[in-house]
Length: 601
Image (tube, rainbow, N blue to C red; front, side):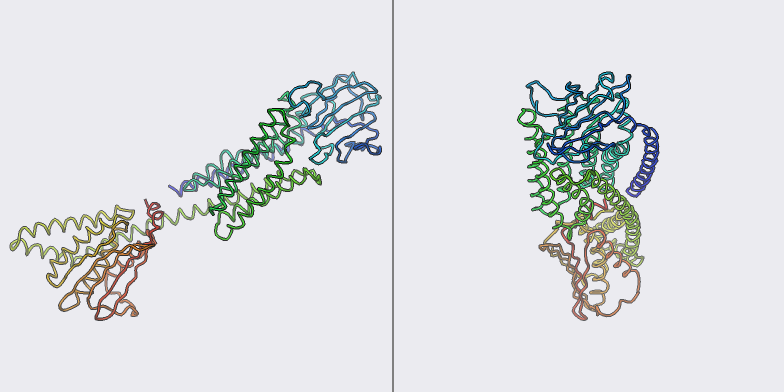
């Protein structure tokens, strides 16, 4: 079943990835073709500009201004004549703007009301009728970026102007953001389907994959909203709500990043640190929301503090991961996949204060981390597939070993001797013969039932079966065979028919080879880290350094016992013997065998 699940998961993942690549290619080609003429709709003001009250400089014909600023003034004329049937659309984010024609204000997003967060510009799209302006008008555009704690901005980051309407804006959206939209859908897809399924199909719930699934969904939503923030006013009329939606997405994405790292921590101290950081980040997010809704300050104004805090948290949790790399495979894989994401997060945070690039660093880091995590997932699926094959092979070998062991324990001479002894008792001691017959039947039934039993059994059950075997052997050897029990621990499990071969060797090759017989002792002990089953005899003994001769099935049974003890319980069999003094066989069962037993079940 596990092997089938792994195969299905592998084929489904490959099929989905192929489908995504195909869709990616088609959308890419389609978006380029659809938006090839959209750039012709853009409008600039050709003339001069001044940054933060500085000297006047000539504008760039393509994008007017390429400098960072907190306040920008551009004077000149529109680069193209306004079509009478179209509008001049202005899209602006987190900044105030005012457009004048001569001394007349044509449009502005300044709000005169005294409502909550009236000083927050948010995201706006304004439309100006084409007949209100001409290419001959002297235009003046003033832009003010009010957030002094954050770095100054480049015009390309938050301002756009073009002739057209809402449909034109949609064309711009698909032309310039088509690939980003597809990447976000891909992220959300992996978060909603692939990684959660992998987290369950891989034999047990993998919290690492489920946490990464949450990160994929929230990161996909954040990158999506961050990329289309200029277009949000198409669907959300309130400028402040548009800004708040994007900022909340940023908070939740960063919080999910910390949760993902914390899930992969194993050391108690590191887990405690991770929990404290996550609680602190959640409290900071909650505080920012309260301050926003009460009008104290907007979410975007609190962005610097959140970025600083997240940067510190990322450094601390990365250090925790580094401390576990030597002892945890999961920590190493997480660190490998988190380095691009954390680096992108830190650089993006620094970029908000000291603007040095317009590249979306967090998106790039998230992309690399996603690819890394997909590779790790494929490796895990392949490993699970190999383990499933190994599991099936082990089950087959264990079954064959149990069959061989059962056959080795029911050898013809043992059956003949037992039946002959019972037959002789029928006339001398019928009552004892009846008891012996019942024990003999129970003994055979126990051997047959061992073929159905996969998991280790309680030692008390194995001991009862062993007593039936020894009762039959005592009928054969009579007073020459003495049995002693020194059972001081029974609260453990052991593979069925794993003690009897050792007792059989003690009877046959120990006291059975001694002229006046001897004693076989079965004892159990509990130690700090293990349980011990000790089978000792005072028989003839043997030289443990001498290679064992292949003299029958007994040795085959012993090898099967060793294999089953090792596979099911991580147990060892230690044989100590001295010629003329006897032999001691010790089964050492580590106490941490629960996982092994459950796996076989």
